[in-house]
Each structure stands twice: as C-alpha cells, then as structure tokens.
Image (tube, rainbow, N blue to C red; front, side, top):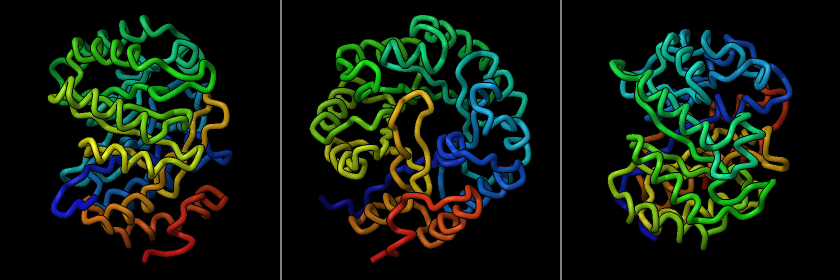
Length: 299
C-alpha cells in the first residue's frame, strides 16, 4: 500500500480521551500547556476536554477553564465532547470551536455511559442542533461501540447503519465510528468502512480505534484500503472508556504518524515535535504511557 502524495487527517484526542482515565488529576495549567504543545505539532483538530458532569468525570472538571485558557493556533479546530444540551451550552460559553456529541450503537452502553436510551440521545441531538443555530460552532458525532460492546458483545452492522441514517437525517456531516471496547478486527473494519463510505460519500467519516487487543494499527491499514482518510489517535496511547471494562488506550498518535510517514502519507504533523510531547507524559500523568516509539525511537 503506497500512500505517496495522499493527505490524511489525524485528530488528537489525548487531552480528553486520554486524561479522563488517569488516576492523577492533572492541574489546569498543565492541561493548557499540554494542548498548546500539541497545537504546535500541526494537528488540524484537537479534542481538548469534555463538558460532562464533574461527578461523572472529575478528571475534566476544569473543562471551561482549560478551553478558555488555551492558545488558539490558526487553522486548528478546538473540539470538546458533549453528552447533552447542558454540556453544549457550557461549551458555547467557553468559545469551543466544535462540539462532539457522543452516543452509543449499543443500548446497554448508552444507558451506562450516558444514563439514557439511544432514542433519548437522538432527541438531545436534535435540541443541540437547534442550540447551535446562529453560532459558529460546528457539530460532530462520535458513535461508540460500533465494532462491539463489552456488555452486549457484537453489534449488528444493520443497527449501526440505522443509527447513522438517523444522524444524517438530523443534518450531521461529521461522524466518528468508534471502537470503544477495542473489539474491531481488519475484516470487520474493511466491510463497515466500505459500506459507510459508499452509502454516504458526502459524510466525513473518522475511525476511532482502541488498541485493547493489539489490532489498532492493523485496523488503520484496513480502513485506508477502503478510502478512510480521518483517524482519531491519542499521544502516548493514552485513553480508554470508564464504562467499557477492559478497554485500553487509543491507538498511539506518534506510532501512527511514524507508520504513515514511512508509507508515504502526508499527515502534516511534525513527528519530532510530537515525540517531545510524548516524552513529557510521565511527568504529566505520573506513569509511563504504552506507546512504542517513545521507547524505541523512529527508524
């Protein structure tokens, strides 16, 4: 597979998906510095934080302060996860560029993670689209457990397709297909990726993989084969889901960028600068992150 001349978009989710699972609370000023360092690496989009209940995710209780204090680099979209209208209103007050609404393909995971049915989540999404009218804030949706659920097991592709159709009907133009439980495998990724890209060519689909079973980068390769060009990743391989037992971190951003560079793809990301950020993580989170490249170095 030769990626020479082809551009990809890598969306950094470490400040949100990564830090939400850490045992230590990262002070606000250090979160801000972390995002600023990532902004200098060349990312087009950074998921900065999550406007959820501080009781649910105490690690990100300073969401508004972080979003308001970061340095805004030209050309970078600063995104925040929101589960409902209240979170959206808080995100708007903090001058968030894009809200990323989250819901699950799995009924059980939606109840556990968000405390509501999928139907109620879709109603919330309708309210959010109305709340965003007249603002410059963009909307994206992350659909969790697309490739399987730790509680329910496999999720039928027809059910995922039904939910995506409803999202499209509500006017959503950016959708992340998320492997929350780390259950995806390349054959499944190829089939679903081809299905969604052919059915809705006008939608910007992102693949969001976790490396729970060591297949994260293999799944990226499978997605590339069918034309996916947007991926979420987390510096150092940080991340996981508090409501998906056993889920480990996201695919590691610097490992992903290194692989794609060797294959000739253009990510627009400065790998050496990104590695400097990754090497600073043990001091930030008080543990060694799981990424490979910070241990072995690039080839």
